[in-house]
Amino acid sequence: MAIFEIVGGKKLKGSVKIAGNKNSVLPIMTACLLTKGTCTLKNVPQISDVDVMIKLLEIAGAKIKRVDKSTLEISCINIKKTQFPSELTEKLRAAILLFGPMLSRTGHIHMGYPGGDIIGRRPLETHIQALSAMGAKVRQTGDYFEAETLKLKGAEIFLQEASVTATENAIMAAVLASGQTVIKRAASEPHVADLCNFLISMGAKISGVQSNILTIVGVEALRPTSYTIQADHIEVGTFMILAAVTKSELEISPVDPSDMDMVFLTLKKFGVQYRLNGSTLKVLKSNLRAIEKVVTDVWPGFPTDLIAPTIVLATQSKGVTILHDWMYESRMFFVDKLLSMGGKVEIADPHRVLVYGPTKLTGQKLDTPDIRAGMALVIAALIASGKSQISRAELIERGYENIVDRLKALGADIKRIS
Image (tube, rainbow, N blue to C red; front, side, top):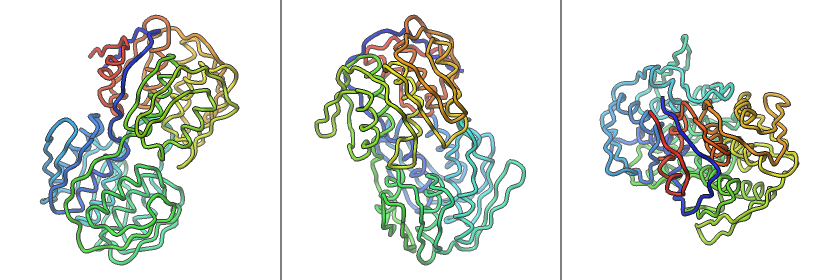
């Protein structure tokens, strides 16, 4: 178990380089299974979720080489094994992204139930719906899923929910399927577009990228490619919030403004001041004020992955803010940690909290429930007076590259204890 020890109350200063998108790299890694060659992925974030996905792909027969800290070569010439053990899949929700590529490549997959963060029920029905529509037979036995098909066929699919990973599985299953597939109510987040652009660079025929209707015409084969993972817009928002609550001026890059519309709009309402120059964003000293409500939504709405840091932002903003995440039942349950630090937060129900600010936070011993809540607690500890210890910090490292070293470089008093 890892522990982050943080002494708060220090202003930060400097530049932050945004890592590759965690939610892009994992489906793109599995999409390498769709070509009998070697793909080169650049700007790969150095996070533990990538390490788990490497192990899963290696079980299938992939040969993976780290060219440097942020570059992977993934060779999928010989893919033979189709069984993935639960001791690995339970560590990674994104393990479900093996379904589409493995069915397309081998016609079979047997895997343990995917795990990951405990932030509420995340069912797999939409994945099963999409793959079944293309001719796969899916069954569950205990904690294992198995699927098989002789040949995937194009279909018209209206997804029962706009699930990101179900959309990605359907896309990866469709690119080599016979005929045309139309995916309606498709998720359109930046990381879904990143996957589509990767597949297009391999020769896939996909139209409607970044819309809610995708049309995919299956091709005979895909070619190996070299591709750069886009920057993580969730990290951009996270570091903007960090700068605002610590009353610091930070320079953040690279930033794609087209990924940030709703985040910019929301943070502006909170009083966060920033200046954008090309792909470089500078957060200025801000006078924070509460806003009436923040509600998460599917893209291009406010991202659920930013709601936990935004709750910390609300504790430092004058007034009362309601924060509502309708997607996950347990996303809000980390706020008891903020209460122990002196935050004034009322849990209205599993999906909504009321936050009263500004409040002074004090350091405490805390426990990390998941990736995003863990990063929110890091931010809270950095503004609190005194020392905080955050245990199970390895969960934070699943999604944030070298976060201790990056924060130290900005002047934070933080260290990692194993």
